[in-house]
Amino acid sequence: MSNLIIENIINNNNKNLKFDFSKSITENIGNQVNHNYDDQLPIEINAKHEAWEHINEAGIEKIKKIYHFKNVKHMMYFINEYMTKIKSINKKPDMIVKDSFIIMSLYTENIMEVTNIDLDLAKYLDDVNEDIVYIQGL
Image (cartoon, rainbow, N blue to C red; front, side):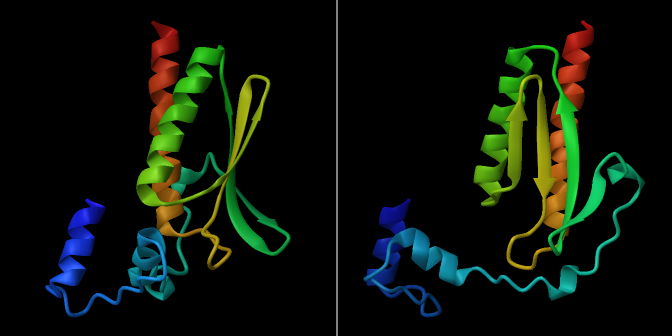
């Protein structure tokens, strides 16, 4: 795919694309992303996210939740799903793994607050955990 981006730049097919050849493709793509969150704030943390604790940690608004697991396989499944998801949305939330539980803290780093992106990730993680709980019950 990166070859197509470079080919497109060389052929000048996209006049709006500002590409700096002294930087990597990742750095150039990052420059194209709009990081304006004004239209997404403030957000309401509603009933479906009530299991997530809303905290203020050193001036940073976060949502936090602890997931408990009965065995290592289920914990590894959760971590793998988490890693796949955060890679696809380019996010790096805080995750602490201890014994048989995982502590998740979600917020958007650029603005130090919870956004809809964080709430969507929280819902996804809850769905993954529900799948694990269902499998444990079989």
